[in-house]
Image (cartoon, rainbow, N blue to C red; front, side):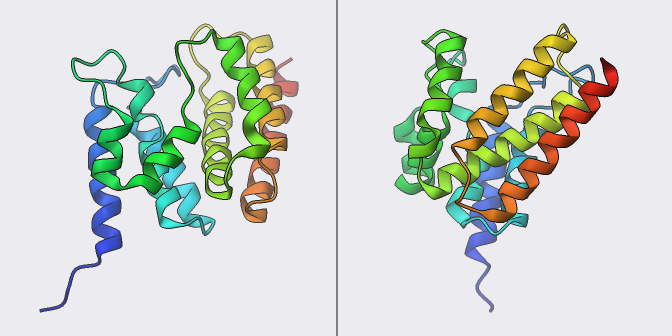
Length: 189
């Protein structure tokens, strides 16, 4: 009997885990699509651009800790490490904001810390920003006016500037996505 593809099984286990954590979560856009669609898109972007398997798995899991903070049993770094290994848990930690800090401080820290991230974390953060820019352009969160969307896209560009160099293909995709988002916002102004 042929041995099953362990990489595929691991990826699907991570996707199932992420779907369970995000089962009740929705994106902020007008369509309120299931949040799991975002983490699937991030993982797909990473896979299509040659990211290592641990980064792809971390893409599926990157919001699980911060998005489970109000759950009866919030997810911990230790549980992620036990389930998916220290490398994946470490990448998730690099991509997770400290939600105890004010939003503006968290955003400033992302810009400041981006250049010091590992190559895999840089890829993960770029893929996350690409997915978010697509959503901001196509289906912005309810209540986000034009100015807030422009501010978000500009901030994402500042974060991405510190993430460049780990994966030229992702760098190019971010640049194209950024330009498309800015063009769309300019047309709406």
